[in-house]
Image (cartoon, rainbow, N blue to C red; front, side, top):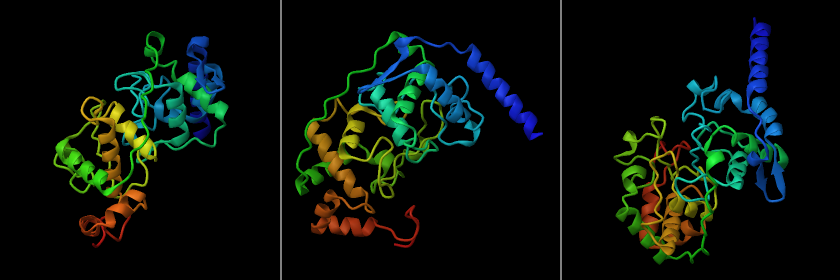
Length: 285
């Protein structure tokens, strides 16, 4: 029975490969000195990716019903992690980075074991699924200014902004992803989505560095309730928010957490929120 099933699958894949259009060089990817080609990327996609993302790249692979959150729909071309402003297409470099990094708290693993050329080819093929790549250009990457100095003042201002911008409504007062609105949130596929839990995370969905967090504030996370704050806060304020959010990651050593704990207020807050027991923070205080 297994042989028959595998034969059917192989036949289906071969049929899809024969009828899928091979787009010309307009759908190539360009990452640094690398040029990715959709033909080579197609072979990689149907070896590694179709089971989740589907034959047509619409996120309806055979594994999709068992995954939460659901796989990315490449036809819609709505991407969470970008260096470009909200609503615009990501750069080839953005997609390349996502494939190599994977997505924390999802079933999308890191594909860093693939060669640089493999990942560039995959990017080129992924772009063939959506007509947006034929009619739109990738957005212009935002400019990330130099990070401001980490200080108690910066952290406290970030704390004030966290309240003023009502980040706590989704992320919770302690940043555990349990705010009053958390249970009502859905993504662009009408699937329930949980806000990020800072207390247990060592990295974010779109990266691990302070610059990555800054980009999230300015670009937003398309396809989710996380908006862009580009028109709401100034660059220095965005850095203040970054510094404050780092203090919510109470299980991760960081310069921000060390500075915050050096103050009486910060030490008291960290001590009251830090949990022991399980990695999810559900253990005994």
